[in-house]
Image (tube, rainbow, N blue to C red; front, side, top):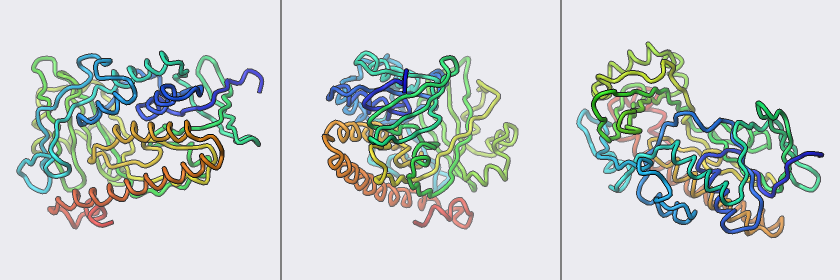
Length: 371
């Protein structure tokens, strides 16, 4: 293992979950932390809605709201859902207690967290992908990674944190068992206005085969996404721009919102958005966070907050694990905590989807209106 990079904790994935794990470790332990991230950190991100409770998490990580630029958190002016009726309802009155929400500029948010990781002694390798993972006789991990310029090199770590998201192949390669509940998929595009400013609202509109979502990422950029089952998207060819636009034009309210706007990029993006749960306690010195641990339907708005709080929890487990037995016990407790949260989420998700009864005999809705 000559020239191998060694660290106490390797975090695979440098999004908010991975960065929160690293920050909590760097703030409260003397452990060395390295993050690897497959992307170049420059792509336009979808953005997410968060409640004001996010700022308490940031304070805990010692990255207060004032650390971010003024346009990172934009207060939403409203949340309208045409769901279960052709009349608009306040989304939070349907799904969660009414509360102030903010639209997050994910590019600014993610990069600010990583800047704090670097300033506190963490190491970040962007454009670096894990290729193979081998557990050594002493239970450390040998991870072979690849960088487009540096080439292949090895990282040796004691603890492996999986923050690689819904598409994580890492957990499966280590023998984790992932229960997949559905194959919800999002197909979306970014729109831009050159003249008028965008209204800062989140809009949801259901139809026979799924539901539309849109939110202003800034005063000029709007993200529009259609969520349906992977099989339906393939059958209806909604992964193709023209068919996707044709379907959008059939919507009553979402189609109005894009009037006068134009595509930023001619290509649609496609991302998995399904619900799943990871069973991992039998894997030594490994813990998943965020979507790699359990993934929630985006209708729940739980993704970003959960990624960060689970990252903090995993960092605490690692920091307090002075022995293998201690780690195993804490890992099992973490799995149990996740299971309780997940069960609550499944019940809440069921209640929400049952609000829409107009197409209850259509497969997309029928399969979501029962546990």
